[in-house]
Every structure is written in C-alpha cells, then in structure tokens.
Image (cartoon, rainbow, N blue to C red; front, side, top):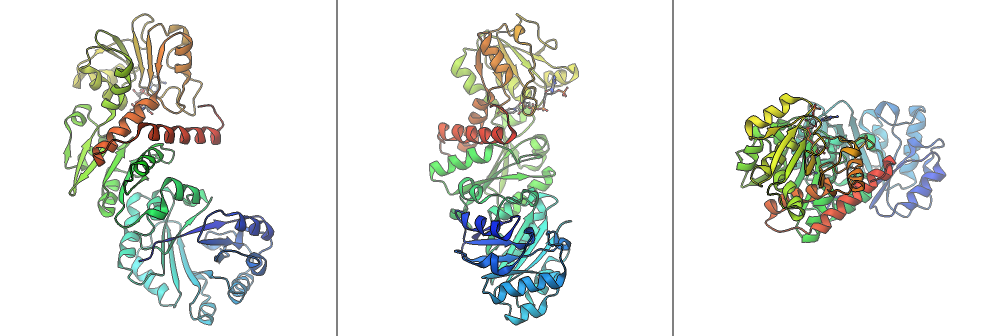
Length: 489
Ligand code: NAP
C-alpha cells in the first residue's frame, strides 16, 4: 500500500479568507476546504487559483458540520465542485446523493460517514454498503470512547486490500489512527486545528511524529495514563529516536483502564510504553513480569515488550537519584520527603540504600504509614520543622501548573542546604525560586524527568540517548505550553 498522504483541513469565515488560508498552508498533499465554515459558500470561489489538490467538503449540521442551509443548496455546491473539476468532493453517505455519485461513476468521490457516539456496530457491513456505491474513497470516522475502540478500525484497515479507504478515530483516544494512518490502511490522514475532534496540526504530525518516515515496520512506543495530552514525554522520546537514527515513534496513548491499554497495545504490537497516573499501579496486573525495583516501589512506570512478553519496570528511583548524587554526597544527610503518593514511594526506595537519614512528611499520616510499612522510613510531622533537614524533597504536586504561585514550605522556613522539587511544570517552581533566594542549592523536577526517560530509552533500545536532545525537547514543549497558558516557566 502506498504511504498515506497528509491532508490539511482549512476553515474560515469567508470564501476569500478560505482561499488565503488554503494558499498559506506550508506543507500538504491535499487540502480539505470546509465550505460549511464560510458565510458565503461557493465552489467556484473556493477552487479558483488553487495550487494543490483539494477535497471540497460542505458538512451539514446533522453530520457534525456547520452548514445550516437547505439540502438543495448543499447539493448544488457539491455538484458545482464536481463539475468544476475538484480533485475530490466529500459526500456524506447518509445524504443519499446517489445521483451525484452516479454522474461521475464514483470517481473523485469521498463517501464519508461520521459517528459521534462511538464505533458503529457493524463496521464491516457499513464499509461494504458504502463501497457498493462505487465511490472512489470511503471515509469512516467514529468517536473513540476509549483507546481500544481503535481496534475495529485497525482490523477493517487490515482487511482492505484495494486502497481507497480513510479510517479515523475522533477524539484524543484516536490519535494513533491519525499518526499511524498507514497501519490503519488509510489513504490519507487529516491534520488541522479542529482540536475538539482530536486533530493534530500538520506541524505536529511532521515534526513531532515524523509522519513522512513512518512505515509498517516502525516500532511503536507511547505514554499511557489518564491524561497525557500535555505530556512532555512524546517530544523527548521522539527527538531522541530521531537523533539516534532509530525507526520508532512515540505517541500519547490515553487509556480508560489498564485493560484498555493492554488490549490496544497487543493489537498494535507496541514495543514499549511509559506509564503514568492512574495506571502505574493497575498495569502491574497486566504484565507478564515485573522488575525487582518496580516490585519494591509497588508501581510500574515503564513497559518493555520482549518477544510478546510485557515486562514492567520502574525508572523513577534511578531517575530521581542520578541528578541528586551528581550534586550531593548523601551519607549522613538529613532528608525530608514531602508527600506520600507514588513519587514519594519511589524516592523512599531510592534513598533507602543511599546512606542518608530519610524522614517522610505527609498531611495524612496514614499515607506515610502505608509507605513505611513497605520500606522502612521514619515519619516526621507535617510540615517539617525548620532546622530539621539538610535536603528537602517535594513529592507533592504543590506549585505545579496551574497553581504555580503555591509552595509547600514558606520561604523563611527553607533553612537547609538543598531543595529538590519533583514538580517540572513549571521548570522553575516558586519553591525553587524561594530556596535559591534563601541560599539553598536547588534541583528541578525536569532533571529527574529527563533522567528517568533516559533510563527508559536505554532499556527499550539498548542505546544511550543524548541527554541534551531530550532536555531541550522537554524545555521547548514546556515553554510552548506556558506561552499558550500565559505563565512563566
Ligand atoms: P500522587 O500519587 O497523587 O501523590 C501526591 C501526594 O502529595 C499525596 O501524598 C498527597 O496527599 C500530597 N499532596 C497533594 N496536595 C497536597 C497539599 N496541598 N498539601 C500536602 N500534601 C499534598 O502524585 P505523585 O505521582 O506522587 O506525584 C507528585 C508530584 O511529583 C507531581 O507533581 C508529579 O508531577 C511529580 N513527579 C515528577 C516526576 C519527575 O520525573 N520529575 C516523577 C513523578 C512525579 P493527599 O492525598 O492528602 O492529597
């Protein structure tokens, strides 16, 4: 099957603006002109002077578009587009414009169906019925209500031997269908700014995910968890894969449950994954083996697939320790760990053999006791008393975006020597700023993030990634996020 094309969707307020935006698209094989978005839709105006092949679409409100005029009017616009030689015209399967399709013998027709509630029950039957119209391309788009909803599309794509198919999973759970369009048997993928249906921008597809170089043999990795849409792991790992010349791609793969991710991962043949909240504990039950350190921490943050076997590991402990040991000799140091969640547990396991005297401080004492029952550690008061620590480690989310003005410890109580904040968004938290002003040596969470990602990369590929490549990619993504959300990193 040929490589999938990149189709960029363009919307605008008027036809004139649509043409301007059409011509300003920097890279695309096809441009989808959404005539339903403009106030003065007309095919001639939209097609005039085009420099690239287009798909003319005029989606009615009853199929999720914004064209509110009559069906006669819409039919006329689409008929005009066909007679004026548009490379493709998108006609909704449910519109029953069979005469339009017959007029051109199905050539240049993209027959589309959109399901916003989920995957239609009889997907194969749907595809057969649509194909029986003779349309050159059939497009089936469905909202993914979970990650494994992608699988029926994957299976349909695999059965399709004759091309002329576009299968799209709408929503964030459907990102894999957009990036791995070739694997889903799609003739093209759509890119653009329709974020509400899960579109990725062309820039993101090309630069973050190297869309042009993906093939059926590209190894697939990803980050899974509840909310991974703003994760900095995809830019870090994709940049590292590219710098190392490794044929692999790393995707955000949000999942509703451990079983959801497991089912999808098996179907797509995933090579490995990073795991984040809330799947760090739940996924432990879905792997074939768990590393000793992951067992001690009680959570996995990495999966590596070896000959079909899923192995769970945890790189948080080493990722935490590495930047710390580069700066501080831990023997005899009094370390106070704030918080008693997943990260604190990895930190306590990491510190256990470091020679420091660790104490755990949590606002809910029972949480601290639960950790101490698994890895012996002293429990201190919340908050720790000034003068009682040399090294303070923040393992709570206090200070994390969006509550960037908060800090777990008041500035005048920062009496120790070193402050390590695991929060990495923003990369310089209020705690770190206060600590530096009080003369403490500081370490930001980005250091740990990069170090644990480097461990993952090494475990998956056997090669050492370039730390700077990973760090710069993470910083760039955090800066972009901060610009969009209007705060300082
Ligand atoms: P978690 O499992 O949800 O645990 C958070 C802990 O912080 C809980 O004990 C929670 O206690 C406590 N906490 C939350 N808000 C608090 C507040 N206002 N006052 C006192 N305690 C509070 O989260 P996690 O996975 O451990 O992650 C914690 C932070 O570390 C996050 O910001 C995460 O992004 C960061 N992290 C960074 C890295 C890295 O590589 N840099 C790796 C892992 C985690 P309650 O139950 O009382 O709320």
